[in-house]
Image 1 (tube, rainbow, N blue to C red):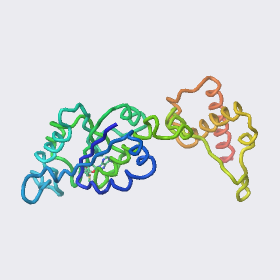
Image 2 (cartoon, rainbow, N blue to C red):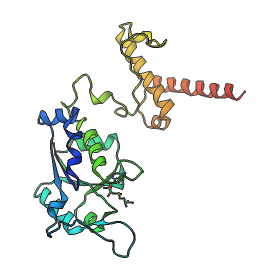
Image 3 (spheres, rainbow, N blue to C red):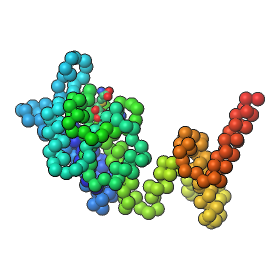
Length: 251
Ligand SMILES: C[S@@+](CC[C@H](N)C(=O)[O-])C[C@H]1O[C@@H](n2cnc3c(N)ncnc32)[C@H](O)[C@@H]1O
């Protein structure tokens, strides 16, 4: 996969994109990541990339001539999708990460200041992605969130043991609890089922724990999670337990 990033702050990518899984993906030639400084596409003497907004109002706006020139140069004749990081875009999630992980090449455009001249959107952007309903100072952190979440979905980036298919959201549920040594810590032990060596029982326990955790933390996810009939029954039991618990506390 090739990812190009257009940014005013390419140095922000240096450390995060050269550590851990991102480093592995690049070292194994699974990921080619290039950052391009938008300022290099400003042709005037002072490399000006922004200007005051027409009609007044605060802040500076990224200039369309500079940003569109940068996008067109980086895209060249490729068919790469051009994605704008923006708090106004569709909110990024697991499904989008999986979808982008199947692309050969895409381009991320990071904004700054008050935002972009609207004509950049109209002329050069295929899609807008937000990483959440809040506003960051620039698109760089958002781009790195997207890159990390996408790249770890590419086969070969995580080892077989740490496969992304068992992570939270991969199957519509949150992942259940994990335990490691010591077997007892500050009076808290490890569930016996994890030390008994009965693999089938352990798999079922893990699945039930994932359902339980999702019920406790993000119950709305269960509306669309693919559950078997017996898992639905287990969920109904959890719901009954919660209702009884609630009643007891009110008495
Ligand atoms: C200060 S923000 C501009 C916000 C803009 N004035 C607005 O209200 O929509 C500057 C840049 O940060 C990036 N950004 C901010 N919040 C973001 C978010 N939630 N997701 C993705 N990018 C974001 C975008 O690239 C944006 O152009």
